[in-house]
Image 1 (cartoon, rainbow, N blue to C red):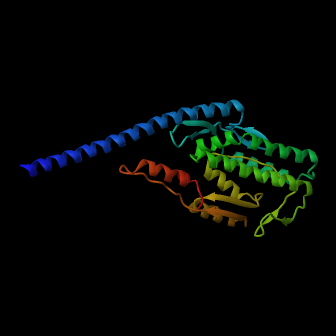
Image 2 (image 1 turned 120 degrees about the vertical axis):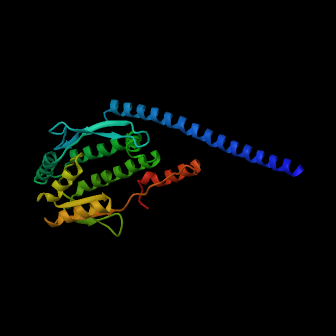
Image 3 (image 1 turned 180 degrees about the horizontal axis):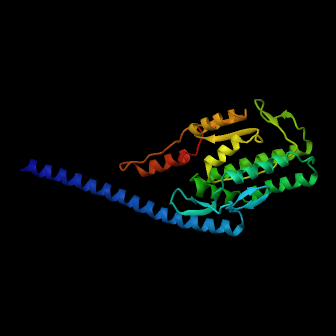
Length: 275
């Protein structure tokens, strides 16, 4: 009888312990759900601020002008955390990419040296990036899921290149010059332009690798796409610089410790990290 009572008490304790664990897990789930809803609301506020500030652009940049696709097509950019649509951006293809290539090619025909006015504008660009690094970092996080601190760091890092070449523009060599690091060399050009195209990736890629005006292809992404670009570039003997690799998924199963999983996901940047 005593043995039976002890067994019943032990079983009751296990059930009680299991109930506490389930309750604890349920509480964490509710907390994460509340946090998720708060993050979604904050994301909407960030998007609204970016739109009002004029920092959120949804068109392609070709020849110094913001342009829609010729056929008016757009594609959705979504927040990976919630699936919410951040913006609808122009979905361009072959025709727009050819326009961008022509604009870049024309820029190399300019016989204009970098005047003080031009250099001053480049420094203004650097100052604007730094002044709005938080907003731009938020945009990166919304689109990619990258931790905000590292996203802001990406903006600062990228702006550093503009600052460096703004200084170099004062003394353009048009040649190979010393670099800050001993294992690198820098090629400085006398003129250039920036074009941004996004949309139909196969069409854009095929147009770039097939053009005789494009001298070099650089790409960071999957090995499979890198192989295709290298094969396409061979036809016109283009130079290529490729940083290739697979994805770094963080898979969370039902029995996982959510707190540990979140820390791990933060470290891996949802796959957006090079280790």
